[in-house]
Amino acid sequence: HDVYDTAEIQRQDAAHYMHPFTDHKALGERGARVMVRGDGIYLWDSEGNKILDGMSGLWCVNVGYGRTSISDAVYRQMQTLPFYNSFFNTTNVPATRLAALLVEISPPQFNHVFFTGSGSEANDTNLRMVRRYWDLKGFPQRHTIISRYNAYHGSTVAGAALGGMAGMHEQGGMIPGIEHIGQPNWLENGSGMSADEFGIVAAGWLETKILEVGPDKVAAFIGEPVQGAGGVIIPPATYWPEIGRICDKYGVLLIADEVICGFGRLGTWFGSELMQIKPDLITFAKGVTSGYVPLGGVLVGDRVADVLIHEGGDFNHGFTYSGHPVACAAALENIRILIDERLVQQVAQDTGPYLKEKFAELMDHPLVGYADSCGFVAGLNLVRKKAAAVHDCEFFEPEQGVGMICRGYMFANGIIMRAVGDRMIIAPPLVMTRAQIDEMIFKIRYCLEATLIDLQQ
Ligand code: PLP
Image 1: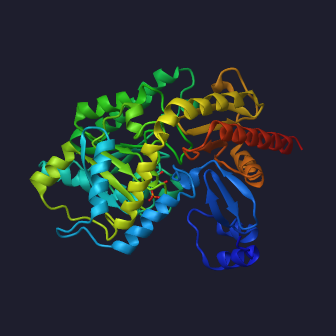
Image 2 (image 1 turned 90 degrees about the vertical axis):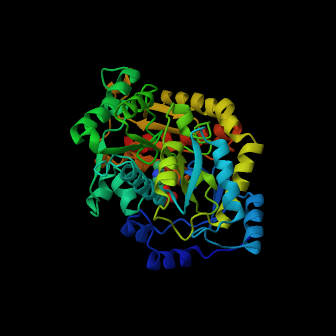
Image 3 (image 1 turned 60 degrees about the vertical axis):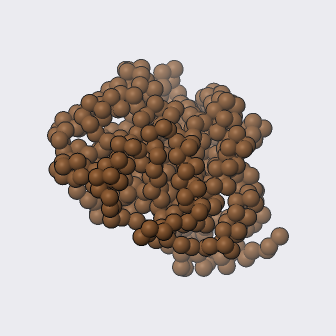
Protein backbone atom coordinates (compact mmCIF):
# COMPACT_ATOMS: atom_id res chain seq x y z
CA HIS A 1 0.00 0.00 0.00
CA ASP A 2 1.11 3.50 -0.73
CA VAL A 3 1.85 5.65 2.27
CA TYR A 4 0.43 9.12 2.00
CA ASP A 5 1.54 12.25 3.77
CA THR A 6 -2.00 13.44 4.45
CA ALA A 7 -0.98 16.72 6.07
CA GLU A 8 1.18 17.65 3.09
CA ILE A 9 -1.55 16.78 0.56
CA GLN A 10 -4.04 18.82 2.58
CA ARG A 11 -1.64 21.75 2.74
CA GLN A 12 -1.13 21.73 -1.04
CA ASP A 13 -4.83 21.22 -1.58
CA ALA A 14 -5.83 24.17 0.59
CA ALA A 15 -3.13 26.35 -0.99
CA HIS A 16 -3.88 25.65 -4.66
CA TYR A 17 -6.97 23.64 -5.43
CA MET A 18 -10.24 25.58 -5.80
CA HIS A 19 -12.90 22.94 -5.22
CA PRO A 20 -16.37 22.98 -6.77
CA PHE A 21 -19.24 23.96 -4.43
CA THR A 22 -16.96 24.31 -1.39
CA ASP A 23 -16.68 26.77 1.45
CA HIS A 24 -12.94 27.35 1.21
CA LYS A 25 -12.61 29.03 4.58
CA ALA A 26 -13.99 25.93 6.28
CA LEU A 27 -11.91 23.67 4.04
CA GLY A 28 -8.72 25.55 4.95
CA GLU A 29 -9.41 25.05 8.66
CA ARG A 30 -10.39 21.38 8.49
CA GLY A 31 -8.42 20.10 5.54
CA ALA A 32 -9.98 18.00 2.80
CA ARG A 33 -10.42 14.27 3.27
CA VAL A 34 -8.13 12.58 0.76
CA MET A 35 -9.72 9.62 -1.02
CA VAL A 36 -7.16 7.26 -2.47
CA ARG A 37 -8.82 3.99 -3.45
CA GLY A 38 -12.16 2.35 -4.15
CA ASP A 39 -13.48 -1.18 -4.41
CA GLY A 40 -17.14 -2.15 -4.83
CA ILE A 41 -19.18 0.14 -2.55
CA TYR A 42 -16.20 1.11 -0.38
CA LEU A 43 -13.62 3.88 -0.44
CA TRP A 44 -10.37 4.23 1.49
CA ASP A 45 -8.88 7.55 2.54
CA SER A 46 -5.20 8.44 2.85
CA GLU A 47 -5.26 7.51 6.53
CA GLY A 48 -6.46 3.98 5.81
CA ASN A 49 -10.10 4.47 6.87
CA LYS A 50 -12.65 2.32 5.05
CA ILE A 51 -15.79 4.24 4.09
CA LEU A 52 -19.11 2.94 2.79
CA ASP A 53 -20.02 5.22 -0.12
CA GLY A 54 -23.75 5.81 0.19
CA MET A 55 -23.61 8.40 -2.61
CA SER A 56 -21.86 6.48 -5.45
CA GLY A 57 -19.31 9.29 -5.60
CA LEU A 58 -21.59 11.98 -6.96
CA TRP A 59 -24.56 9.76 -7.91
CA CYS A 60 -22.53 8.13 -10.63
CA VAL A 61 -20.50 5.03 -9.72
CA ASN A 62 -23.40 2.70 -10.57
CA VAL A 63 -21.30 -0.44 -11.14
CA GLY A 64 -19.11 0.23 -8.09
CA TYR A 65 -15.42 1.02 -7.82
CA GLY A 66 -12.49 -1.09 -9.01
CA ARG A 67 -13.89 -2.52 -12.24
CA THR A 68 -10.75 -3.55 -14.07
CA SER A 69 -12.68 -4.48 -17.20
CA ILE A 70 -13.53 -0.78 -17.61
CA SER A 71 -9.94 0.32 -17.06
CA ASP A 72 -8.81 -2.39 -19.52
CA ALA A 73 -11.26 -1.12 -22.15
CA VAL A 74 -10.02 2.43 -21.59
CA TYR A 75 -6.38 1.30 -21.85
CA ARG A 76 -6.99 -0.62 -25.06
CA GLN A 77 -8.82 2.30 -26.65
CA MET A 78 -6.10 4.74 -25.60
CA GLN A 79 -3.50 2.55 -27.23
CA THR A 80 -5.54 2.14 -30.42
CA LEU A 81 -6.96 5.61 -30.95
CA PRO A 82 -6.84 7.96 -27.95
CA PHE A 83 -8.72 10.73 -29.70
CA TYR A 84 -10.41 11.73 -32.81
CA ASN A 85 -13.24 14.18 -33.25
CA SER A 86 -16.55 13.55 -34.94
CA PHE A 87 -16.84 16.99 -36.53
CA PHE A 88 -16.94 17.39 -40.31
CA ASN A 89 -17.99 13.94 -41.49
CA THR A 90 -15.68 11.76 -39.40
CA THR A 91 -16.56 9.31 -36.66
CA ASN A 92 -14.97 6.66 -34.46
CA VAL A 93 -15.96 3.10 -33.66
CA PRO A 94 -16.78 3.31 -29.92
CA ALA A 95 -18.94 6.44 -30.35
CA THR A 96 -20.91 4.87 -33.18
CA ARG A 97 -21.38 1.60 -31.29
CA LEU A 98 -22.39 3.44 -28.15
CA ALA A 99 -24.96 5.54 -30.01
CA ALA A 100 -26.53 2.34 -31.37
CA LEU A 101 -26.49 0.68 -27.95
CA LEU A 102 -28.08 3.69 -26.24
CA VAL A 103 -30.85 3.66 -28.83
CA GLU A 104 -31.41 -0.02 -28.06
CA ILE A 105 -31.80 0.46 -24.29
CA SER A 106 -33.79 3.72 -24.40
CA PRO A 107 -37.54 4.21 -24.96
CA PRO A 108 -38.71 3.61 -28.56
CA GLN A 109 -39.00 7.26 -29.62
CA PHE A 110 -35.21 7.66 -29.33
CA ASN A 111 -33.14 6.90 -32.40
CA HIS A 112 -30.39 9.53 -32.17
CA VAL A 113 -27.72 10.58 -29.68
CA PHE A 114 -25.68 13.78 -29.35
CA PHE A 115 -22.57 13.34 -27.19
CA THR A 116 -21.09 15.90 -24.81
CA GLY A 117 -18.48 15.82 -22.07
CA SER A 118 -20.86 16.31 -19.12
CA GLY A 119 -24.44 16.68 -17.99
CA SER A 120 -24.15 20.47 -17.91
CA GLU A 121 -23.02 20.59 -21.53
CA ALA A 122 -25.85 18.23 -22.40
CA ASN A 123 -28.38 20.65 -20.93
CA ASP A 124 -26.81 23.53 -22.85
CA THR A 125 -27.26 21.32 -25.90
CA ASN A 126 -30.92 20.80 -25.02
CA LEU A 127 -31.49 24.52 -24.78
CA ARG A 128 -29.97 25.15 -28.18
CA MET A 129 -31.72 22.14 -29.71
CA VAL A 130 -35.22 23.08 -28.61
CA ARG A 131 -34.77 26.69 -29.72
CA ARG A 132 -33.43 25.52 -33.07
CA TYR A 133 -36.37 23.13 -33.37
CA TRP A 134 -38.91 25.93 -32.97
CA ASP A 135 -36.95 28.24 -35.30
CA LEU A 136 -37.00 25.57 -37.98
CA LYS A 137 -40.71 24.98 -37.40
CA GLY A 138 -41.26 28.69 -38.08
CA PHE A 139 -41.95 29.77 -34.50
CA PRO A 140 -38.87 31.79 -33.52
CA GLN A 141 -40.76 33.40 -30.63
CA ARG A 142 -41.17 29.99 -28.97
CA HIS A 143 -37.99 30.13 -26.92
CA THR A 144 -39.01 30.04 -23.25
CA ILE A 145 -38.05 26.99 -21.24
CA ILE A 146 -39.88 26.19 -18.03
CA SER A 147 -37.94 24.49 -15.27
CA ARG A 148 -38.39 24.08 -11.52
CA TYR A 149 -37.08 25.81 -8.43
CA ASN A 150 -34.51 23.75 -6.59
CA ALA A 151 -33.72 21.76 -9.72
CA TYR A 152 -30.09 21.02 -10.56
CA HIS A 153 -29.26 21.03 -14.26
CA GLY A 154 -25.55 21.80 -14.12
CA SER A 155 -22.98 24.54 -13.72
CA THR A 156 -22.50 25.99 -17.19
CA VAL A 157 -24.27 29.29 -17.77
CA ALA A 158 -27.31 27.63 -19.31
CA GLY A 159 -27.21 24.75 -16.81
CA ALA A 160 -27.24 27.11 -13.84
CA ALA A 161 -30.00 29.23 -15.36
CA LEU A 162 -32.12 26.17 -16.17
CA GLY A 163 -31.53 24.88 -12.67
CA GLY A 164 -33.43 26.42 -9.82
CA MET A 165 -30.79 26.72 -7.12
CA ALA A 166 -31.12 30.13 -5.45
CA GLY A 167 -27.44 30.26 -4.48
CA MET A 168 -26.43 29.84 -8.12
CA HIS A 169 -28.94 32.35 -9.45
CA GLU A 170 -27.79 34.95 -6.92
CA GLN A 171 -24.27 34.79 -8.36
CA GLY A 172 -25.65 36.32 -11.55
CA GLY A 173 -25.05 35.38 -15.18
CA MET A 174 -28.66 34.37 -15.77
CA ILE A 175 -29.89 34.16 -19.33
CA PRO A 176 -33.31 35.32 -20.49
CA GLY A 177 -36.20 33.07 -21.48
CA ILE A 178 -36.15 30.67 -18.54
CA GLU A 179 -39.03 30.43 -16.04
CA HIS A 180 -39.43 28.31 -12.92
CA ILE A 181 -42.29 26.58 -11.11
CA GLY A 182 -42.39 24.72 -7.76
CA GLN A 183 -41.24 21.15 -7.15
CA PRO A 184 -43.73 18.35 -6.44
CA ASN A 185 -42.56 18.27 -2.82
CA TRP A 186 -45.52 16.75 -0.99
CA LEU A 187 -43.84 16.94 2.41
CA GLU A 188 -43.22 20.66 2.08
CA ASN A 189 -46.29 21.82 0.19
CA GLY A 190 -48.91 19.08 0.27
CA SER A 191 -50.43 19.53 3.72
CA GLY A 192 -54.14 18.59 3.78
CA MET A 193 -53.90 16.63 0.51
CA SER A 194 -53.12 13.04 -0.36
CA ALA A 195 -49.88 12.66 -2.29
CA ASP A 196 -51.83 11.85 -5.45
CA GLU A 197 -54.05 14.91 -5.10
CA PHE A 198 -50.98 17.03 -4.56
CA GLY A 199 -49.31 15.56 -7.66
CA ILE A 200 -52.11 16.95 -9.83
CA VAL A 201 -51.95 20.33 -8.09
CA ALA A 202 -48.16 20.57 -8.54
CA ALA A 203 -48.39 19.61 -12.22
CA GLY A 204 -51.06 22.29 -12.59
CA TRP A 205 -48.42 24.91 -11.79
CA LEU A 206 -46.95 24.12 -15.21
CA GLU A 207 -50.22 24.92 -16.95
CA THR A 208 -50.55 28.15 -14.97
CA LYS A 209 -47.02 29.16 -16.02
CA ILE A 210 -47.61 28.23 -19.68
CA LEU A 211 -50.72 30.43 -19.71
CA GLU A 212 -48.87 33.26 -17.96
CA VAL A 213 -45.96 33.19 -20.45
CA GLY A 214 -48.24 32.52 -23.41
CA PRO A 215 -48.47 29.04 -24.98
CA ASP A 216 -47.07 30.40 -28.25
CA LYS A 217 -43.85 31.38 -26.45
CA VAL A 218 -43.10 28.17 -24.54
CA ALA A 219 -40.52 25.88 -26.13
CA ALA A 220 -40.05 23.15 -23.54
CA PHE A 221 -40.38 21.95 -19.97
CA ILE A 222 -37.39 20.34 -18.25
CA GLY A 223 -37.37 18.24 -15.08
CA GLU A 224 -35.57 15.40 -13.34
CA PRO A 225 -37.82 12.31 -13.02
CA VAL A 226 -36.81 12.21 -9.34
CA GLN A 227 -35.18 15.44 -8.29
CA GLY A 228 -31.72 14.59 -6.93
CA ALA A 229 -29.40 17.30 -5.66
CA GLY A 230 -32.28 19.36 -4.25
CA GLY A 231 -33.00 16.55 -1.78
CA VAL A 232 -34.26 13.41 -3.54
CA ILE A 233 -37.78 14.66 -4.09
CA ILE A 234 -39.82 11.67 -5.20
CA PRO A 235 -42.92 12.92 -7.02
CA PRO A 236 -46.40 11.52 -6.38
CA ALA A 237 -47.40 8.92 -8.99
CA THR A 238 -49.92 11.32 -10.54
CA TYR A 239 -47.39 14.10 -11.21
CA TRP A 240 -45.56 13.09 -14.39
CA PRO A 241 -48.54 11.71 -16.34
CA GLU A 242 -50.29 15.03 -15.70
CA ILE A 243 -47.17 16.99 -16.76
CA GLY A 244 -47.16 14.92 -19.97
CA ARG A 245 -50.82 15.69 -20.59
CA ILE A 246 -50.20 19.43 -20.17
CA CYS A 247 -47.15 19.40 -22.47
CA ASP A 248 -49.17 17.55 -25.12
CA LYS A 249 -52.06 19.97 -24.79
CA TYR A 250 -49.85 22.96 -25.60
CA GLY A 251 -47.35 21.20 -27.89
CA VAL A 252 -44.54 21.94 -25.42
CA LEU A 253 -41.43 19.75 -25.77
CA LEU A 254 -40.60 17.63 -22.73
CA ILE A 255 -37.00 17.19 -21.56
CA ALA A 256 -36.22 14.58 -18.90
CA ASP A 257 -32.92 15.31 -17.20
CA GLU A 258 -31.83 11.75 -16.43
CA VAL A 259 -28.26 12.57 -15.39
CA ILE A 260 -28.98 10.92 -12.02
CA CYS A 261 -31.98 8.72 -12.85
CA GLY A 262 -30.53 7.11 -15.99
CA PHE A 263 -28.69 3.80 -16.15
CA GLY A 264 -30.63 1.88 -13.56
CA ARG A 265 -30.77 4.21 -10.59
CA LEU A 266 -34.54 3.84 -10.21
CA GLY A 267 -34.62 0.18 -11.25
CA THR A 268 -35.35 1.00 -14.90
CA TRP A 269 -32.85 1.95 -17.59
CA PHE A 270 -34.29 5.45 -17.55
CA GLY A 271 -36.41 7.05 -14.81
CA SER A 272 -38.85 8.15 -17.51
CA GLU A 273 -40.01 4.54 -17.87
CA LEU A 274 -40.84 4.27 -14.17
CA MET A 275 -42.47 7.70 -13.94
CA GLN A 276 -44.44 7.27 -17.18
CA ILE A 277 -42.79 10.23 -18.85
CA LYS A 278 -42.67 10.35 -22.66
CA PRO A 279 -39.84 12.80 -23.20
CA ASP A 280 -38.72 14.33 -26.47
CA LEU A 281 -35.17 14.70 -25.16
CA ILE A 282 -33.26 12.90 -22.41
CA THR A 283 -30.15 14.35 -20.75
CA PHE A 284 -27.67 11.73 -19.58
CA ALA A 285 -24.17 11.66 -18.02
CA LYS A 286 -22.81 10.16 -14.78
CA GLY A 287 -24.05 6.53 -14.85
CA VAL A 288 -23.34 6.14 -18.58
CA THR A 289 -19.69 5.49 -17.64
CA SER A 290 -20.30 5.02 -13.90
CA GLY A 291 -18.15 8.16 -13.64
CA TYR A 292 -14.95 6.32 -14.62
CA VAL A 293 -14.33 8.96 -17.30
CA PRO A 294 -16.40 12.02 -18.19
CA LEU A 295 -19.19 11.59 -20.72
CA GLY A 296 -22.65 13.05 -21.22
CA GLY A 297 -25.14 13.58 -23.96
CA VAL A 298 -28.67 14.00 -25.18
CA LEU A 299 -30.94 11.28 -26.46
CA VAL A 300 -32.84 12.98 -29.24
CA GLY A 301 -36.38 11.78 -29.83
CA ASP A 302 -37.82 11.45 -33.31
CA ARG A 303 -39.96 14.58 -33.05
CA VAL A 304 -36.86 16.77 -32.63
CA ALA A 305 -34.38 14.69 -34.63
CA ASP A 306 -36.62 14.63 -37.72
CA VAL A 307 -36.74 18.42 -37.79
CA LEU A 308 -33.09 19.03 -36.91
CA ILE A 309 -31.77 16.48 -39.36
CA HIS A 310 -34.23 16.64 -42.25
CA GLU A 311 -35.41 20.24 -42.13
CA GLY A 312 -32.32 21.82 -40.57
CA GLY A 313 -29.37 19.79 -41.71
CA ASP A 314 -26.71 21.75 -39.91
CA PHE A 315 -26.68 22.26 -36.15
CA ASN A 316 -23.88 24.63 -35.22
CA HIS A 317 -22.99 23.15 -31.89
CA GLY A 318 -20.52 20.61 -30.52
CA PHE A 319 -17.57 19.96 -28.26
CA THR A 320 -14.02 18.76 -28.87
CA TYR A 321 -14.84 15.80 -26.66
CA SER A 322 -18.24 14.98 -28.21
CA GLY A 323 -18.06 11.22 -28.77
CA HIS A 324 -14.59 10.90 -27.23
CA PRO A 325 -13.50 7.37 -28.15
CA VAL A 326 -12.01 6.59 -24.74
CA ALA A 327 -15.09 7.76 -22.86
CA CYS A 328 -17.35 5.83 -25.24
CA ALA A 329 -15.24 2.68 -24.79
CA ALA A 330 -15.67 3.03 -21.02
CA ALA A 331 -19.44 3.49 -21.47
CA LEU A 332 -19.73 0.39 -23.66
CA GLU A 333 -18.03 -1.75 -21.04
CA ASN A 334 -20.01 -0.13 -18.21
CA ILE A 335 -23.32 -0.85 -19.95
CA ARG A 336 -22.17 -4.41 -20.68
CA ILE A 337 -21.66 -4.87 -16.93
CA LEU A 338 -25.09 -3.41 -16.14
CA ILE A 339 -26.66 -5.84 -18.65
CA ASP A 340 -24.65 -8.99 -17.87
CA GLU A 341 -24.93 -8.63 -14.10
CA ARG A 342 -28.62 -7.75 -14.39
CA LEU A 343 -28.05 -4.81 -12.05
CA VAL A 344 -31.07 -2.83 -13.23
CA GLN A 345 -33.37 -5.81 -12.63
CA GLN A 346 -31.68 -6.46 -9.28
CA VAL A 347 -32.53 -2.93 -8.10
CA ALA A 348 -36.09 -3.24 -9.42
CA GLN A 349 -36.91 -6.64 -8.01
CA ASP A 350 -34.63 -7.32 -5.09
CA THR A 351 -32.33 -4.75 -3.52
CA GLY A 352 -34.52 -1.71 -4.30
CA PRO A 353 -37.59 -3.09 -2.48
CA TYR A 354 -35.32 -4.26 0.35
CA LEU A 355 -33.82 -0.78 0.70
CA LYS A 356 -37.35 0.66 0.75
CA GLU A 357 -38.37 -1.68 3.57
CA LYS A 358 -35.25 -0.93 5.61
CA PHE A 359 -35.52 2.82 5.09
CA ALA A 360 -39.16 2.80 6.15
CA GLU A 361 -38.12 0.99 9.35
CA LEU A 362 -35.87 3.94 10.20
CA MET A 363 -39.04 5.90 10.89
CA ASP A 364 -39.14 4.22 14.30
CA HIS A 365 -36.21 6.45 15.30
CA PRO A 366 -37.23 9.56 17.27
CA LEU A 367 -35.35 11.87 14.87
CA VAL A 368 -36.85 10.52 11.66
CA GLY A 369 -40.18 12.13 10.73
CA TYR A 370 -40.37 10.86 7.16
CA ALA A 371 -38.43 8.42 5.00
CA ASP A 372 -38.96 7.38 1.41
CA SER A 373 -37.09 5.77 -1.44
CA CYS A 374 -37.37 4.95 -5.12
CA GLY A 375 -35.07 2.29 -6.57
CA PHE A 376 -31.62 3.21 -5.29
CA VAL A 377 -32.25 6.79 -4.12
CA ALA A 378 -33.62 7.41 -0.66
CA GLY A 379 -34.02 10.20 1.86
CA LEU A 380 -35.08 10.76 5.45
CA ASN A 381 -36.13 13.94 7.21
CA LEU A 382 -34.76 14.78 10.63
CA VAL A 383 -37.40 16.38 12.84
CA ARG A 384 -37.55 17.88 16.32
CA LYS A 385 -40.87 16.27 17.14
CA LYS A 386 -42.56 13.45 15.28
CA ALA A 387 -46.27 13.25 14.59
CA ALA A 388 -48.60 10.58 13.26
CA ALA A 389 -49.23 12.67 10.13
CA VAL A 390 -45.94 13.74 8.57
CA HIS A 391 -47.20 17.24 7.89
CA ASP A 392 -47.68 17.76 11.62
CA CYS A 393 -44.02 17.05 12.50
CA GLU A 394 -42.08 19.90 14.09
CA PHE A 395 -38.97 20.73 12.08
CA PHE A 396 -35.67 22.11 13.37
CA GLU A 397 -34.65 25.70 12.73
CA PRO A 398 -32.41 25.77 9.64
CA GLU A 399 -29.73 27.70 11.60
CA GLN A 400 -29.28 24.69 13.89
CA GLY A 401 -27.73 22.83 10.95
CA VAL A 402 -28.94 19.45 12.24
CA GLY A 403 -28.45 17.81 8.84
CA MET A 404 -24.80 18.89 8.80
CA ILE A 405 -24.30 17.64 12.37
CA CYS A 406 -25.70 14.26 11.34
CA ARG A 407 -23.59 14.24 8.19
CA GLY A 408 -20.51 14.89 10.34
CA TYR A 409 -21.25 11.78 12.43
CA MET A 410 -21.73 9.76 9.26
CA PHE A 411 -18.43 10.93 7.84
CA ALA A 412 -16.60 10.23 11.09
CA ASN A 413 -18.11 6.74 11.29
CA GLY A 414 -17.25 5.51 7.82
CA ILE A 415 -20.39 6.20 5.81
CA ILE A 416 -21.10 8.89 3.24
CA MET A 417 -24.60 10.30 3.28
CA ARG A 418 -25.46 13.76 1.96
CA ALA A 419 -27.40 16.44 3.87
CA VAL A 420 -29.78 18.77 2.03
CA GLY A 421 -31.00 20.95 4.86
CA ASP A 422 -32.29 18.39 7.35
CA ARG A 423 -32.98 15.75 4.72
CA MET A 424 -30.34 13.02 4.67
CA ILE A 425 -30.03 11.34 1.30
CA ILE A 426 -28.34 8.36 -0.30
CA ALA A 427 -27.82 7.00 -3.82
CA PRO A 428 -25.66 3.90 -3.36
CA PRO A 429 -23.87 1.94 -6.09
CA LEU A 430 -26.29 -0.46 -7.79
CA VAL A 431 -24.06 -3.39 -6.83
CA MET A 432 -24.90 -2.98 -3.14
CA THR A 433 -26.14 -6.31 -1.73
CA ARG A 434 -28.80 -6.97 0.91
CA ALA A 435 -26.08 -7.63 3.50
CA GLN A 436 -24.43 -4.33 2.61
CA ILE A 437 -27.79 -2.55 2.90
CA ASP A 438 -28.02 -4.01 6.43
CA GLU A 439 -24.54 -2.73 7.18
CA MET A 440 -25.46 0.72 5.86
CA ILE A 441 -28.69 0.87 7.87
CA PHE A 442 -26.80 -0.18 11.00
CA LYS A 443 -24.34 2.67 10.48
CA ILE A 444 -27.14 5.14 9.76
CA ARG A 445 -28.93 4.16 12.98
CA TYR A 446 -25.73 4.54 14.97
CA CYS A 447 -25.17 8.04 13.57
CA LEU A 448 -28.80 9.06 14.12
CA GLU A 449 -28.35 8.02 17.73
CA ALA A 450 -25.12 10.04 17.99
CA THR A 451 -26.92 13.07 16.53
CA LEU A 452 -29.77 12.69 19.01
CA ILE A 453 -27.36 12.53 21.97
CA ASP A 454 -25.48 15.55 20.58
CA LEU A 455 -28.73 17.54 20.36
CA GLN A 456 -29.70 16.61 23.92
CA GLN A 457 -26.42 17.93 25.35
N1 PLP B 1 -28.38 17.37 -14.32
C1 PLP B 1 -28.55 16.72 -13.16
C2 PLP B 1 -29.90 16.19 -12.82
C3 PLP B 1 -27.48 16.53 -12.30
O1 PLP B 1 -27.66 15.91 -11.13
C4 PLP B 1 -26.21 17.01 -12.67
C5 PLP B 1 -25.04 16.82 -11.79
O2 PLP B 1 -25.15 16.48 -10.64
C6 PLP B 1 -26.09 17.69 -13.89
C7 PLP B 1 -27.19 17.84 -14.70
C8 PLP B 1 -24.78 18.24 -14.33
O3 PLP B 1 -23.93 17.25 -14.74
P1 PLP B 1 -22.34 17.51 -14.79
O4 PLP B 1 -21.90 17.75 -13.39
O5 PLP B 1 -21.82 16.25 -15.42
O6 PLP B 1 -22.12 18.68 -15.67
